Amino acid sequence: MVCEKIVKVNETLASEVASVINEANCMYYRFIIPGIHFKYPIVEVEEIANYMKSMEFFACIVREEIVGVIALKSSGKEGVVRFLYVKPGFQRKGIGSEPLRFLEDYAKGKGLRKLSLVVHSRASWAIRLYRSHGFVTIGFRDKGAWLDYIMMKIL
Ligand SMILES: CC(C)(COP(=O)(O)OP(=O)(O)OC[C@H]1O[C@@H](n2cnc3c(N)ncnc32)[C@H](O)[C@@H]1OP(=O)(O)O)[C@@H](O)C(=O)NCCC(=O)NCCS
Image (cartoon, rainbow, N blue to C red; front, side, top):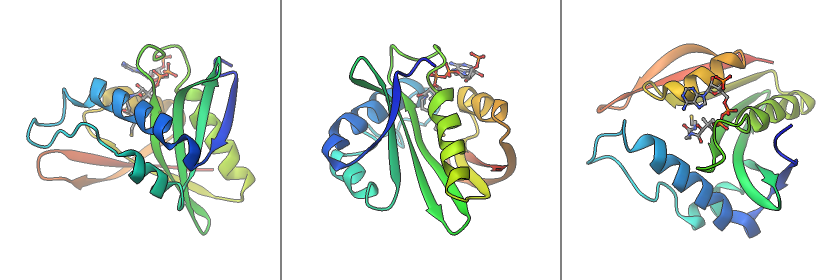
């Protein structure tokens, strides 16, 4: 395990969580989101704090620093994976897989039967990661300037 621990986080850490999301998003998505649609920051601290009321957020910790984040939105027996991000400088070290694996086990433990997610169709790095975890593409969503894939995994 590369993460020293994965912990559930609440609004008190919204600023650190938002920072990981914004920096990692900018690093990857500025190349595939057309300029007029690209947003930085992609989320404000208050938005993340608000999301934390309806989703469970987890952080991957290395030397007391949040280096990765992931969130789960549950509804009935289904869950949606949101906000999988690893901080620039910590990527490609196996960290991203760990919160995803953790979330799958956590969701199973909660009795969820299925996980889904939405990913930009040109985010090859993320699609590769999700496929290696058994997610399959089940549809797409036309965002106008680009396509998102909808991926799913039965737990
Ligand atoms: C997706 C993300 C979280 C992966 O985190 P990471 O710590 O770099 O991932 P890992 O080191 O655990 O890599 C796991 C697998 O992901 C894929 N992957 C990760 N980064 C990749 C890259 N730059 N290019 C191609 N494949 C990549 C590979 O399959 C890799 O396995 P491998 O190293 O055996 O080939 C990270 O790239 C990130 O924060 N990206 C921006 C946010 C994002 O796109 N999130 C998904 C939103 S839907």
